[in-house]
Length: 178
Length: 178
Image (cartoon, rainbow over all chains, first blue to last red; front, top):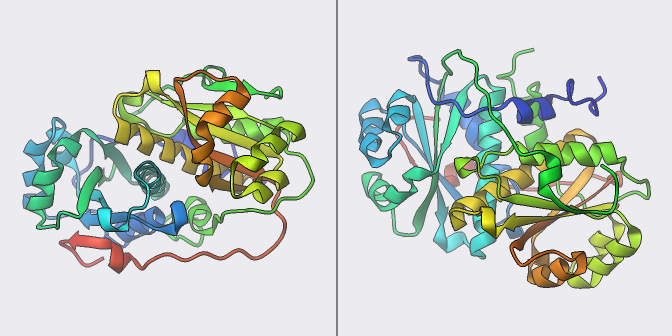
């Protein structure tokens, strides 16, 4: 297999075929798979390797239900089997922008891992408005600031498409023909 | 192949085996591979799919040389064959934290793509202090804010290790045994 061929390069294939999944099957997710997704997250790079990310894992349907009114996307939350609220630990941070970027890298690793395992997942950002409520719900300290929530489950089988701007629109400078 | 087996799941394998590469061989990188890395970047998720990232591609050795004094890591810059300064377009942003996270997701896609192609890459963050100088060097507008630089090349063959906190240290709440 030539890894330079993106059709056959499984990493590129995963990156290009990952989609946000918002409707999930009833079936539960084995804890070992949730663990794999988290392990993928923590292998993201971070500035000075400070690993500012922290995770909550919510699988109890009643607790998942309590997240429902905290976002406009309650329907997605209700359908999911696992919620992973991701926080930064303010005590572990060293640079606002770089730490937020690190959390983004961690999130992408989790989404790609979920996709590679056949799971479906979506990055919920709008729910950030409920950060303090979620911290309270989970009984967490003030040092933990909500960064995003991953909602996860086995994906309902349907076609999902997405679009991106062309690379040409996004390259602001180049000194070679790409 | 069972994708749930992380030894054989190529995406998890890439996530766990990726390392920052800071010493590069002389050989140039074909533009088609640089393009693949960028394409991986733009398939990251972003809030409202706003795709706030913008890219510069620098391969000319003289121009790469001009980046050298702009960071404490000039030695890495000098050794690299391609620099990809990544910016956010302030005119495309909608939420500071979420846009910075999106750039982090985009960075991780690029690093994973490079790794999957056999390339070596490192995320340079310290160079952010030279954002305005780099914008000037490349003749870019004030709307572009430097977020990070990817330095890339064919990796010098050596063993690279890294460490992470245990998952147990990073989980602040769970309602199930993982």
